[in-house]
Length: 480
Image (tube, rainbow, N blue to C red):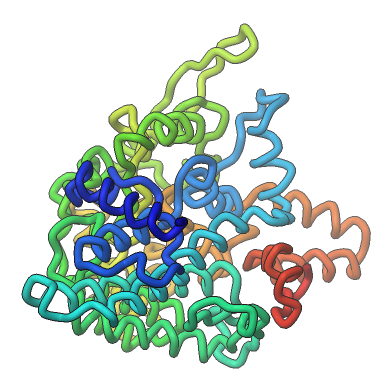
């Protein structure tokens, strides 16, 4: 009976929704019942359901977009805020990097992508190729593998020691349909985790469809993701080449920096994103407004010092008066992510990131200053900046590349957090942590050593306790 009801649900969904955009679909039911997906139309609807699991909806929107901003020191609550969740989220957890299980939602979402991709690929094996429109089955397989690659990469970067190829702390590779026999599984090494990501990417590169919209996987998105993966793995020469190839293959920079965010779903610069359907708009607008427009949180002095004098300042930050407990306060808010009064989609890949990857990867692989500077000059030229003079030294070049990461990419999806780690500038940019270090220095060297060790451990999230409890073979990250 349950199977019949599910199939009826599929048919009703197909009739009512007519396979319209994924963002207007209801969340996907489980795909693990034999016979639930037996036609191409059912497979298409199931694929839409996989896209639904891309982070993030509801409160997860705040975690996905802003956790890295708080941790890096780019964002903080207003000093006049004295109560409520604004303090709990931004003060009690992130600046001290003791964020507990904040990543559990993203863990669950990404593994739901992987699980449902496995179900869908298994189901499509039983559907004849001739039942699909020419080439569509291969494209769907490519989309599935892109989504798995992205999910595994996000998991590795958030929960694994992605920077250390010798580390045992990689991801859980779930490449089988879930069962009692494989529920308990040990983590892969970091090297094995990258191999799994590349395996999925290779299939996506070979079979994913051409770019049609930023909300669907494409071969262009796969090329961009490959460059990103190589970059975070530390293979800088290869990353620079991949970024250059992706830049020529993907859509160009938008002529308008503001348009990237005001019209993220239609801006050609956005390669892949998680936008929100009509049924999600109200909720996402609320969370986006709370995060970026309420005045509860705003850019830090560290961020404002970096962006001062850049033309993007007026596009990223807005100064406004807000009323809080019968008093009026003048504050800066991050208008970049709330330009039109609605939530900006979670942007996973955009062309500007490839320019930054190319610049930094060239710089770190000893290319000439001129070659490494060219992508930064292009990004600044796009916004009419006058700060285009080539750096005289490599130290100056690296400083400008770091600055560009923060100005161009902050508040979107953790970019500034990973930048402070690569450039070793966390204590410089996060004033809360710098103040805590001073307190520890007053206590003695052992306190300082313990504090610095904690910062090292807190580069990544803890594995959620739900996973550890259900899967004893999964080892927890150090320091948790």
